[in-house]
Length: 417
Image (tube, rainbow, N blue to C red; front, side):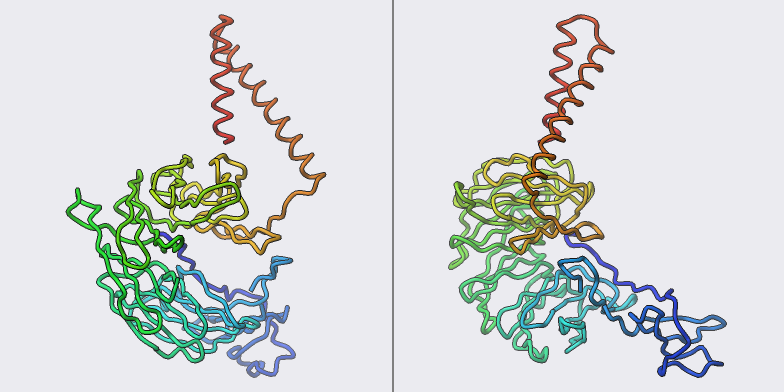
């Protein structure tokens, strides 16, 4: 699946204090609500057969971006596969599955300061479509093909639209229209104020042109075009006003990933997107022509991010994150963490989303740059020395040693790229 399935399980095996808690039951009866010794959670203890079961009913603690410490947590359901939306002090969340045996989701609004649930709307099907917030309305899709427009004040339905297939990706908005694809291989543009269709187009890139693939990719809208990937292995570009197909570019694998579209300083309008083959592409936004490509040696399922003049993406099987020069495709950053949507930035700090961890990264100081350059030089010297030792171990003729040595050096250089 494209997005991480995050199981929100809060452990109840906490140290709890039976003393000084007005909410606890009588001392002889362990049942009731208990405060943890650290004072950061309350556990509801009840009997389940001959044992005692605990369930978290309150947590003091989102994550402070300066320190990485958790401010609050909230148990919302069983499975989630969508990113939240934030605005006006509220957080909006969609759930894939609200209960272990309930194959249906929910949409929730929480107060950002403390995680208090402000409203909750049960959905008839699962949803992994990340909510899109615009003013007083929030938009998202669901697996039964229903696209929702909810009022942010109370979660009431403003309008609903039924697509022909499951809508698993997030929606994109531009010029008063919502854009998305479905699992029947259709692309839609809806008027955001009414939910009425502005245009709808089918695809035929699968089964030798006789069938449609599936859209799992959140669209990017820029330069009068709508860009998105399909499991038929193609990246599509449509005119945003009419839905006319501008170009279709075949890749070497499924395209679950969502594109990033940008024009970095000194560059031209470019679509950045990865495929399941492990190849990451930079495509000409106007024509679909490949500007450059990079072999990441791992399946790319999540969206890419452009920060400054660097484009970041992650692989799901290798769980690596790469940063490439947006103009050149040359590797300038690597970390053995990641999986799906790699980074966001507030302009000062890059926040990297690992498979199960978050990291805050900042640019090196001048002194740090010198140390990093020295480490790179030392690493290259050690690599060349290792190549020379290996060449001499397996060869005796001078010319053969030289060829083996240079092949090894080039191979190591390619891996560093």
